[in-house]
Length: 326
Image 1: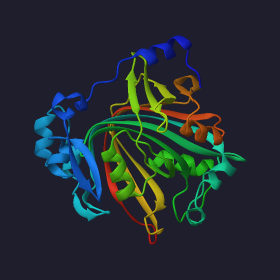
Image 2 (image 1 turned 90 degrees about the vertical axis):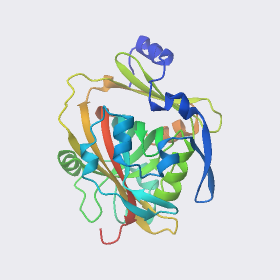
Image 3 (image 1 turned 60 degrees about the horizontal axis):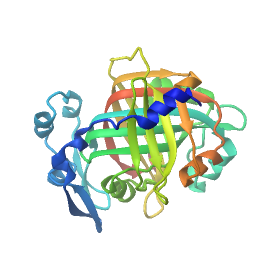
Image 4 (image 1 turned 180 degrees about the vertical axis):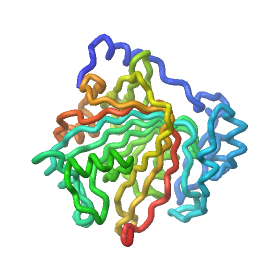
């Protein structure tokens, strides 16, 4: 999981990637109430003005370079998810990198609640080994303004189906329909944290997450929420040979709502530019001494199974629903 030292040095010194968040007008913030939480949001930003339901005409005017055709075919509906919102939440311009590693199967089962384990199980890719997906997202322009996020999730079977280990994983890959159980999901804005925890029952907390770019790599620096110091760096190569063929990918997750009832949620991604690799040199994960690093170390990560570089995608995140009857 190492890239040459010279490249790593470049990653440390690279300037942060520009985004809509760099607009000086968005540096001012206002407090809004979400489910009893006072949440700072960008004054005049999309969330301040439209609360997750901006007209597509507004997006087209603000970002005329974006292709919004996919969103025109998706109907939003008002939902009560601990606060009034709209589903799905739209993500208009984003990028991500994902690394899928093998991990200790017993540890993965240990981290999942018993009632969820009765419905889904970690995929056993070979004896004693499961799989986890580490994904770093940069949401540059979305209904929730802009933010960065790190997802650590166990790869599982789909509820109500039998798990055939690596064959199930292959089947999910071929159908672009993935299931998982989210272990950790830190974000770098309070708006994303509160909406995620209250509305989607996700394990989010607020910490510093910076995206850095060099000519050949993209890196996410993740801070420890307790100390504010750098915890770990997740870097990946900017792969060549990008496919520009739009591809729809569904990522679903099981969890529990505030009352302890089993639920599931899902996001659909329209990947506009993407490539993948199984070369271990494509990924560099430098873990530190913070709590998130310690947690990742406990999973005993092993072989890199797949790396995905997606520099351009759009997304729709749907509100959670009861798992029963799915």
